[in-house]
Figure 1 (cartoon, rainbow, N blue to C red):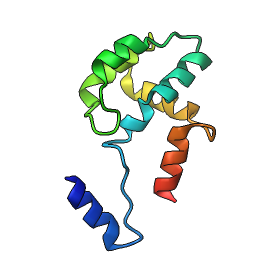
Figure 2 (figure 1 turned 45 degrees about the vertical axis):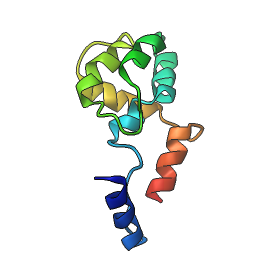
Figure 3 (figure 1 turned 180 degrees about the horizontal axis):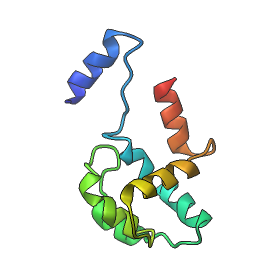
Length: 105
């Protein structure tokens, strides 16, 4: 959707909700979430490598970069499992959590 189409959809009804970021992955692959995951799992987050691939966390299509982002956390394996693990570390103290809460409720 274009920004105009998005705005039209949201303003049509107060019950219409839409994420601000492109996909749910754009929230899960936020640096804040990845850092927390790495801290909790004794992994190092390669932010320089991440920044070479991710240039717009809001609008960029991250699906083609999923394995590269996973590698930034020194993790191999199933990407779906990785995303589930990332979701577990999202907490109330995070900006990502606050953004999602505002959009959903």
